[in-house]
Image (tube, rainbow, N blue to C red; front, side):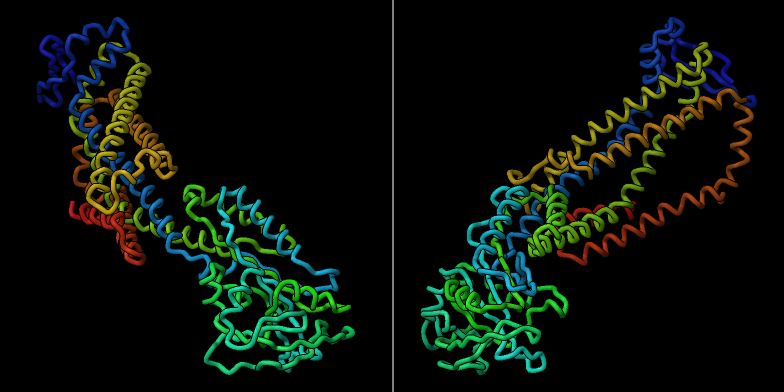
Length: 536
């Protein structure tokens, strides 16, 4: 119990069980004015009396926000860099994928023309501009195809062929790269294309075929075509001309069931004018029609921050484009990047868990510094006749002050640490964005959680001490003494070991996952933090 208060020399004399001790509490002259009900004098006195505990708690808590700030900045800049590196290496015209396609069974549509292509491309342009301006370049590629049959369609014979046309400007390039023969001059002449130059072609120059575009259930009308030219290796020719190398074999990149599959034995090619003349000369058309478009995206305008927005927008297009599934290649790559970056974030977060646990324990231990002195300060305030309600306000304000100062100090130190990280790693400071990373939910949500956790837990802990002052200090002392041995092996203490064991296990898991992908300075930085925390 407190026996004597000496405000002049800032000491308190107290005795428990015959033991007397004197301890300075740093109250200064403000203690004499407490009865004047000055709240700010009361608060100032309380802070000064626990200055050491207050400062150490600020320093330890600021370490959490330092780590969180540096992590957010490093994470943000690595996300930007990884996103642009991911798409910088992407060649949209040679990626074994196409942007959109549709394979349907025709029902004798009148007057086939390029309107299907032009309408589709204009729709794609408008949709992409709504998502990101200038995302679609002008050098897109397309193919229009029909499944034609030699004589009568017979699936057992496999007598289905592909009848293709491409943009008009491509045929100027094809003319100078024919293996033999010449270009078609009317609708009854075609080029024969075979993919493997080392293989034996199915047809030779001047071979004549009788083709139809109706299945076995429909009346058949036939037209004859003559092979006047042979060409191979279209993928290379298209790519050199600035067109998609994926279009000559576009049907290989479609995801269709057996009924919709565009299965063909060989391919015939002609110019758009002759292509539509040939198809429209049939009085009845009942076969499979395929349309495919491949876009050379301007991916530099994409922002990784809007990744979820892009994916949601692309997903909303499905089912609304008259059977087309648009932007398949871009959507696939955005999903791949999202999975890659989620893996990176999770692995680094797991690696950092042990250090976070270490810092939390450090904060808990700093709150125990000068605990007796803190209890004496509370007792002295109560001894001055102050109500618990006013003392709780002081405690709450003190917690708010130290948390605010910890946040400011932590953000400042985190910025300095981030500068050092990028100064000694791969990225120059001119290319580094520091403050945008602090606006990410990865920083804001944990920061708010830590702020509330420290505020609430600190207030509840000090409030319990305040309540304990209403009981006999001698009784508390006896209970504490009898619990010292039991405390070591109590159920509560054993349970408290579980979070640390789990965090360390998660840390090793995160370190393992970080080695799965490509190594980066970000992983190296946090792996160092992980092993440092284990040593401590």
